[in-house]
Structures are given as structure tokens and as C-alpha cells.
View (tube, rainbow, N blue to C red):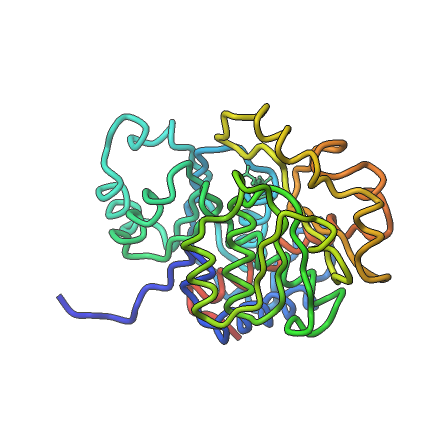
Length: 314
Ligand code: CP
Ligand code: NVA
């Protein structure tokens, strides 16, 4: 077998170089500037993905990831197949390996949202086309590309930005850790001990000389920060809601916590949000909140990711 160019999977931000991440973000911003209007059936002028087909596999619910990949692919001239694992033979015991090989013969890229991170890695190991991680319990890299785009739009140079996370040290938090380590911005995580990021992941980040700190005190994390970010206390697949809500109560983002951040700080949340739990209605609906810019940026970020994976970066 010949060894062709490496397939560009997008499984984790940690797998890419800073330059690759910056190229994706630049492409995403370029795609955003080139758009004619939200909601219109516009195609990018050069339709770089004309004739390409992407399979979108969802084992869990999704609004933003589903719609943004579908619309991104179509606006770039390509097409999508929306699949759920219960409709695939995968749900009846066909192996991931065989599924990867079969899909690779028919589609140009695969996006999967799965309850099992290792299964996504296995899919990528056996696929002959790019595999994109659309969220696993471990990480949510596509979300963080949209968040970085949003941060750069509101705060300028990422390297000079201080981001404070207050809440569960979950999949979204881990992708933030990966991004901070690769792109050099400061990240302060305030998490309860039992819902903190894995120490091995923090060690990985430290080895890259990253500027990441973990504290138990949300105020310490928020002090002077440019952005405060949080996520749901109970993620898809979590079965310990009561424990989580009790432990995470002190980490709620409210107006008092926002007051400790920089004067012009923004609030981010990947959505869906649970008002009165991880964030108050007051903060979510305040002028500081950029959550709907963030949601829109999923569309533009997916385009950058697709352009990188399918090797059509401009
Ligand atoms: N933020 C995010 O991934 O949203 P969905 O679950 O709606 O895709
Ligand atoms: N942490 C959340 C993100 C949802 C987009 C979850 O995994 O359910």
C-alpha cells in the first residue's frame, strides 16, 4: 500500500499545531466576511466543496452542531447525509472498523457526536477520509474554534487575552485547555475538586509552558479577566445531577462574579444554557453576553475546519 498524504482528522485541538489552528481561524473569519446574509441559501462564491459529501452521525441530541455543519457544507457547495447510530448497523453491532471502511468508500468526510471518545478515535484510525469530533464526553473541539473566533472578534489578539472558566471541568473546559496551551492565551479554571479537569491533561498543558491555572475560587479566576465562560453543570450522559448541582452552586456566573472581571469583559457559553443554574438570566441577557455571536460562529468555524480537513484552505 502506498502512503498518501496524512488524513486531516479533527479529533482534538491538542492534535493540531498553533499555526494550523490559526490558519483555520483565519479561514473561518474570511468565510464570515464573504457571507451575504444569515438564513439565505447562499453559496460561497467559489464553492470549494462542490461535489463533496459529508456524513453527520449523531448518537446524542444537537441543535448548533447539526445545523452549522449541514449549512456550512451546503454553503461551500457540498452536501450532507444526516445519520443516527440507531439507523446505522453500528447500532446493531457492526464494528466501528467496518463502518469506517464502508463510509470511506462513499463519503468525503465524517462528523460524529458520540458518547464514547475512544470510539471516535477508532473510527478515525480506520477511516480513509477525515473524521471530525462533534463532541464526546472528553472534548468539544469544534465549539472551541467558534469560541476563539468570538473571542478574537471581541477582544483582538488572543495571546493577550485572559479567559476565566467557572464551573464543571468538562469536555468544553478540556478543549479550552488544549486551545490555551496551543495558542498561548491565559486560562484560569475555577472548578470544584470533584469536577476538575484530569490532572494528566493539565500536566500535558504545563509541559507546553502554557499559562493555565486551576483554582477552587471563582473570584480569583474572574479577577480582571477579559472573558468569563461556563457550561451546563450536567452534560449529556451525566447521571449524577444532584451531586453536581450541589458541588457547582458556588461557581454560578452571576452579576457579582462578572463585576470582578475587566470592565469590558464578555460572557460566553456554548449553549444550551440553563438559566438560574450555571448562569443567571441577568448575565445571559446582559450586553456582556456574546452567546449568540458564539452560536453563529459555529457556522463560520465549521467552514474553516472543513476547509482544513478537506485541504481547500484559501
Ligand atoms: N454547543 C453545542 O454543541 O450545541 P449543540 O449540542 O446544540 O450542538
Ligand atoms: N458539556 C455539554 C456541552 C453541550 C454542547 C455536554 O457535553 O452536554
